[in-house]
Image 1 (cartoon, rainbow, N blue to C red):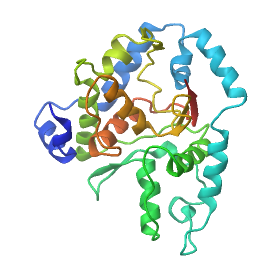
Image 2: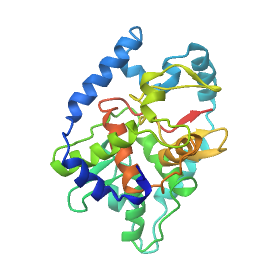
Image 3: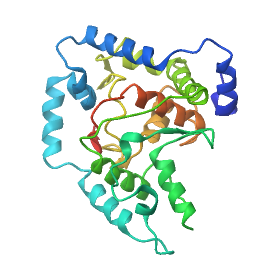
Length: 274
C-alpha cells in the first residue's frame, strides 16, 4: 500500500468499511502480551522503554541521566515559551498558566476532523498570533515541546477515543503500525511486539507500551533533541521505505495509536537515548 498517496481522511473512510477494532480491547491485549513476555517487570516500568528490559543498558542510561544532554533544550524551551509574541501575547494564551499539558496530547479535534499533536498545537498557537510556524523535527519547536514535556512529568496520559471519527483515526495509525513496508518488508509490530527485547543490529528493540512517554528525545546520533516524528521518518528509512512528511495525517494517527497504547502511564520526557 502506498501510504504517501492516501490522505488520512480517505484511509479513515476505507477502514470504516472494515471491522473496526475496539481500542480498549487492543490496549488490554497488548498489556497482556508484555506481562507474559516480561512477567518480572511491572507495566509502569515500560515508561523507560528498553531500559526497563536490559539491566546493563539501564545502568548506562541512569549515568546519562545524572547530567542529561537535554537539560539545555529544556532551559532554551522555557525561555522560548515565555518570550512574548510580537502582538504581546504568549504560548500561555493558548495553553493556560500550566505548560504541562502533554498528558492530553495527541487529541482528536472533531471540528478539524484530524488528530492534533502537541507540536501541531504549538505551531497553531504561533500562527493564531501572527508568527511563522517552526520546523517540525528539531530546533526551537522540539525545544518548546521538551520544556512542556518536562513540565508534564509525573502526570499520566489520558488520551480519549470517544467518537467514530476518532476511532477511524486510531485505526489508521494501528493499520500503519502493523503494515509491512519497504524493501526489508518490516512492520513496527515485528520489532516491538513479536521480537521485543531482541537485538536488531546494535540495538535492543523496545516495547510498544511506553514508547510515547519520553518524547522529545535527545539522541547522540542527532546531537540534539528531536520529536517522535523524526523517529518515525528514521524508522521508515531504516527499512528502506520512503518516509512520510512529518505531522502528515498518517503519522499523526500513528502517534495517536501509540500514545493510546501508553494510556495511564507516567510521562517522563524529554528523554535521552543512544
